[in-house]
Figure 1 (cartoon, rainbow, N blue to C red):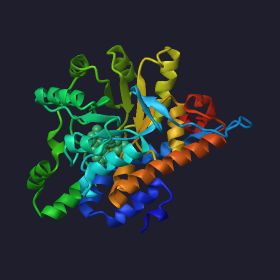
Figure 2 (figure 1 turned 180 degrees about the horizontal axis):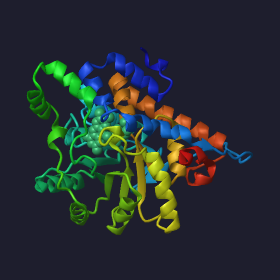
Figure 3 (figure 1 turned 120 degrees about the vertical axis):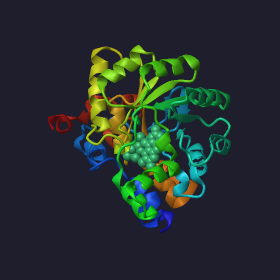
Figure 4 (figure 1 turned 60 degrees about the horizontal axis):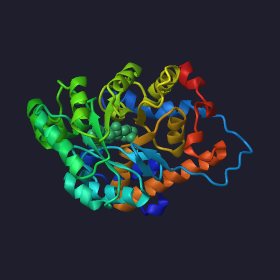
Length: 361
Ligand code: FNR
């Protein structure tokens, strides 16, 4: 269908289901076990309501902000999502270009289908980009990548810490069974060959590694996949620059909580302890609307990541789709902030939210 028939982020998902190969659809859409966390990530946002202010002069609304020191046009970013080429021949290249045109940040996945250099070369010279690091058992590879990030001007390194092992994604497994017509074991090893992430895990990763990464570079280090308040406090103790509250889009531990709920807890504790400015809090999972982004910012998030949304937009329309996704989210945010009675990001506070349904169960 023509791109002007797309009105919101979910439209990209519906179109993707029709146009993607069964392989790509299974890989992108799948989540762990019974996919409760996948659904909760999204539904939890629907348990938060607004208390809008009136008569506040909202003629001019500014949604620009700064993340890890980079100025960006909107407080959301494209989160690392592997294998963009499964959905579109331009792969991560068109995502880099789309993000560059709209001045938002692309987090480049360790498991991208294009090479790191290809993706960086596709960006504007001054375009801020982040790198997502999967830590391999051989740490020398991690340090090599950190050096490469420095060389290429990467503005943030996001170490993914929720993938000690890969979650059971049955949609994906079923497809592979069907595809390979093999017995269990062979399918397993075949899947390992096909999917680089399978071998990109080190269950031996600890805080000690994170401290060493931090010492090895002056690029901000962020831990992606934090799910508890006390782990945020540990990150602060270790002088880490940021955390992403994330359950990997529901793809790892099923029944891990929706990140927006965790954020509400984190926000309360950081305020009590006066630690709000000690670390940048990011969040991802289930975000499909500008209003979702606003809710997360009201609860203290610095930025909000979207994974599948950009994979789907890119699969359907390449760079144009990415640009359209960003513009729709910017427009939704701007409209909702006007209706909420606020003119800029710094005015987004928890007082604008009604959290009774979120916290009442
Ligand atoms: C991911 N995600 C991910 N995360 C990461 O750190 N490295 C990676 O390579 C990938 N790859 C990946 C592939 C696919 C197909 C998906 C759907 C997700 C997780 C991603 O960064 C993010 O945490 C979630 O996608 C956020 O949830 P939503 O926005 O997809 O609901």
